[in-house]
Amino acid sequence: MVSPCHVGRPFSRRLCLIPVRLSLRCPDRFNRGSEKVRRMEWTVLEGLQPYAETLAAMEDRVAAISRGEADEAIWLLEHPPLYTAGTSARPEDLTQPDRFPVFTAGRGGQYTYHGPGQRVAYVMLDLNKRGRDVRCFVHRLEDWVIRTLGEFNVTGERREGRVGVWVQRRDKAPNPDGTPREDKIAAIGIKLRRWVSFHGISINVEPDLSHFGGIVPCGIREHGVTSLVDLGLPVTMTDLDVALKRQFDQVFADGIACDL
Image (tube, rainbow, N blue to C red):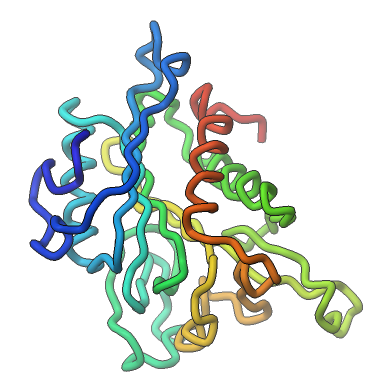
């Protein structure tokens, strides 16, 4: 098993010493006789991972994948409380700039929050092998989140013009026009370099939802945020990780082709 510390620039000492408790590879039936899908390394990092060091290590891993020197990878982790600014972030959407550290992420999208209780999945896939279609790739990421949530009887949905995955809140008072209120439960933001992806998705398991108050999440003021625990589901990170792995194998088994 190749840990993130062993490819390119090393993580900080603090990060390298964190034990890895899961490393899995895709079943052979997804790899045998095909150059389209490579071996997959899954790594779960314990503790809270420093953002800048993690981003640097992810960029090094992406470069190694592009050179053919490393397998595709998914890293599952949590960060300390922080805000990240995507390439479309607007200054006015950072409403409390001194609340938590703010990092320029380089991914698509606007401001988002990361912190304890939120599962971040950094997705490093070679789209040269899986299909060079950005729209279909994002669609598959959304499918992955929606199917994972479905394992916990949560109906995640797409919304036109609103990136991420949303849930209807029929337990709350409806909007003034009578439509159900909706909260965001998962964010998606990616970047491609030589058709290798990085950044990825985040799913709210049990974060402090008040921490989202320092930004306008993804530039959307009309809707709120929620989590699995906020919805009344006592889901653990381990529960979510198992579901993510199982559903990834289903959603991405045949590349990223889709019918949009």
